[in-house]
Length: 248
Image 1 (cartoon, rainbow, N blue to C red):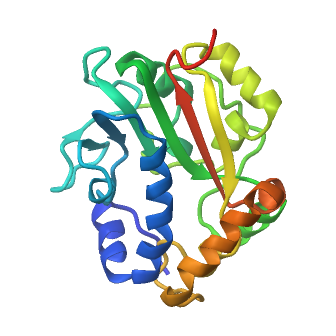
Image 2 (image 1 turned 90 degrees about the vertical axis):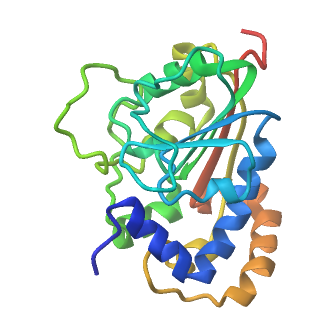
């Protein structure tokens, strides 16, 4: 079956799949809870779902869609410095050619005390098997996620490496390397979660193996287990960075 390739494709599946909305509701609530009060910039808004959970959001993507506010590239944000209180990125970081440039830009457009919140695939022993067998996006743990260099103007914006977030934030050593490279954005939270409900839901595929009526109770169990099982089983990684939030 073909995988979604445009914002409209993702939005159509979102609107037609209640179990997907139920799973993602909890994730959007995590994002909103991590945000500071004020104005939020969403990078890679895609199907435009964050606005249903947060009132003051400027939603952008590299591809156009009617429900987005602006088309822009995460590597070159067209905003003045200190324009936002939050920069949110959901399932976008692993698509970026030069992630380090995004974080430099995010730091620039954030006000002091503002936050970057990213929610991404997390690579663990269990999730790596699933992503390798059942997900179309590659997992390359050998890539240098902190590398910089010229951007390729011919690159497909949907090219990806699901390992990128884990390569940046998946261990204390990796977080230290990131902090040395981007000292203006100290990491204040790194959480692994989502074990079985998400893979059983099928994500943005049209199939699902879990009924929507069980999502809330199963997710509550997962959240309770997250501190104990996250490093081995987690399919998702939430990272929060705060500009000027810690001593530098």
